[in-house]
Image (cartoon, rainbow, N blue to C red; front, side, top):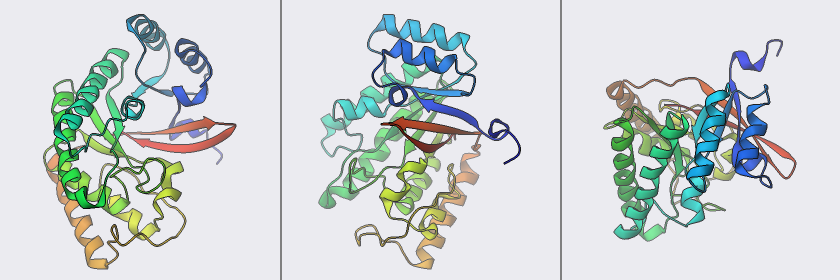
Length: 271
């Protein structure tokens, strides 16, 4: 590439993964003074004093601020698709708090992930995830903010309900029928964990997300939607949802994840 990558992407990094052994304020400072970065993803601050200090730095920086609520859920093992209503409400509550904190820090939206699931309650968990996400989207919409669901593995480390690309496309279509401030967040480093070929990944093309490519492997039967008619139907649903939502795709944020000396690529698509 002859031209600068900054012409096409806002290059950012995830605060808590880039400098895990430093204080939160120092992490933010180090990213803010690095002119290579155009964006930063932050998450929950420990207290009001830390939050205020982070806010001051971000206000003086050149950075676009993004907010990841994933640590809020993972740290306390909260599940937005918990089939237990009390558990679901606890997850919803922390996501509502995340919207408030994100707004305070200057972010225009929040990202989160689905929770763990069991095969026998998968359909019920899907309904509960819709309920939680719609609640959060309703709240965020009052502030002019977006909500993004990050696609994770469904049978490995996170074992999240969302999930394979066809299932993510179905969820996005259902959400966009009612909320135009919802989108999917696709991370390049997650592609190999969902075993998908480009045929499956194309199902999310028409949602507020971008294409992905990964190694080939057969999906487990519980998730398979391999027929051409099935994929075609997913595309139709997503197109219809986007027409109704009148949402915009926005500009991409290419994030570099640093962990144990390895750099991973992530593409955050704002909806």
